[in-house]
Length: 123
Image (cartoon, rainbow, N blue to C red):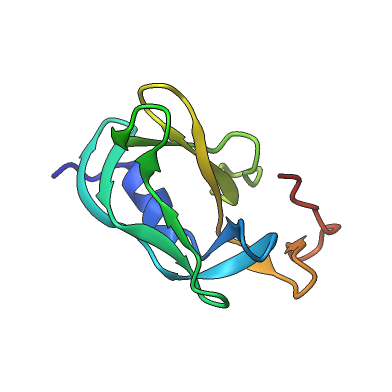
C-alpha cells in the first residue's frame, strides 16, 4: 500500500459533522483504510460519532456501492498547508459523503484554532 498525504489526512482527523447531532463531534471510530491510489482512498467501515453513535458510511448513494474516497481539503488549511478539515467525496460521481475535521472543537460546535476567531461550519 502506498503512503501518501491523503492517507495521512484520513488518519489525522479527530472530528466530523454528525448528521444526527447536527454538530461537529469527535470520531469514536474511523473506516479501515484498505488501499490508497494517488489521492484516492479505498476504505471499509464507517465514521462513528462518539456522542450518539451515528454511523457515517463510506457507501455512495448515487453509485450504489462503496467507491474510493477523495478528501478535498483546500478550503480549510493552515498557511503552512497543514490539514484542518475538508469534504469526503465519492471519487466517481463527486457526491459529498461527509465533512471531516482535525481541529480542537468547542462544545458549541464551532471550530477553534489558537490565536484566531471561531470558524462556523455550514452544512
